[in-house]
Amino acid sequence: MDFNVKKLASDAGVFFTRAVQFTEEKLGQAEKTELDAHFENLLARADSTKNWTEKILRQTEILLQPNPSARVEEFLYEKLDRKVPSRVTNGELLAQYMLEAANDFGPGTPYGKTLIKVGETQRRLGAAERDFIHSSSINFLTPLRNFLEGDWRIISKERRILQNRRLDLDVSKARLKKAKAAEAKAACEGDAVPDFHETRPRNFVLSASASALWNDEVEKAEHELRVAQTEFDRQAEVTRLLLEGISSTHVNHLRCLHEFAESQTNYYAQCYQYMLDLQKQLGSSRGEILPGTFVGNAESTSPPSATTSPTTVAAATIPAVPTIPVVPTVVGAPNPTAAAEGTLNPNEVKPPASGTRKARVLYDYEAADSSELALLADEMITVYSLPGMDPDWLIGERGNQKGKVPVTYLELLS
Image (cartoon, rainbow, N blue to C red; front, side):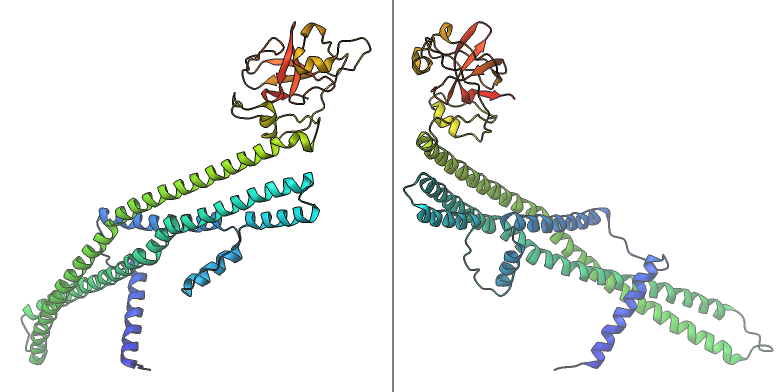
């Protein structure tokens, strides 16, 4: 090992001298070269860019991989320059468990069939999540990380060099100032007329010699100051160009941010489509699995499509399970089942004696025939059910008007 004691001692001396200089600057006891306002703004902008880039990078990593142990593992693989092993997503793992459970319970049973359908959807969701993480890592995380580990390190290095050049410049200014003060003092002593009776002639000769020495010291300090000023100006220009390049960094990060948002949009669009397909599959088999069961709807932000059947729309909601009053069957009374199947005569339907419920209309609904009741959004109606009636329909009353109404257009109130 090449151990240079002289260099070590020199570096230690420089470090100690600059530490003293920093302390004197903080205390206002030493001169400090100030940078111009534009340069200070560039420095503040660069520091802000670095700090916010670190925070955005860290939080995006947490968003894409919430497991801290997995993040540490990926970090180690990256530092070792090794490929990160493929990891099963939570959705894919859930899909695996559901499919295994379906095989155990019996793929032909209603529960087994549903487990298979939901499991396949979870597998597709997990694959979409994997693609989203991969694209976001390449298009968004990698550019941010490259800035922090590449461009910012270069900027930090040049800023440290500029700081050292400024300290050298301030030392040269202080040295020149002291040399000029000593030269002026020596010149004043040399201009005085010597008194040979009281002062030895030798002192006068020494004073003249000291004045000449300080004159040489001033010239040397001025030369060092010119060199230090030139090096400081050159380094300031280099650092300024790097700091102005932060604008290009912002443009690059803006493009990466657009790509990240596009990847996220595609990911959620895929998930939405997969869930719609799953809802259609579950809705088509709902009558087989839960015959005669009515499920009330949760409030939605958009009305059902005109081409979508009430059964499919009802299955696509995430409802609560309210209890709907049912009109009892009375001997001799009109057959309510026939009425519910399309031959409903509003005048023949009698509401239950008690237990009718209020409902708020979510969307406008246009009656398809005379057996249905047209609805207006936000109005209040009274609803009840009939024995054997299609669970996706209710009997609605508004004043003297009666008719069938689709459940998916209503919010049942307690």
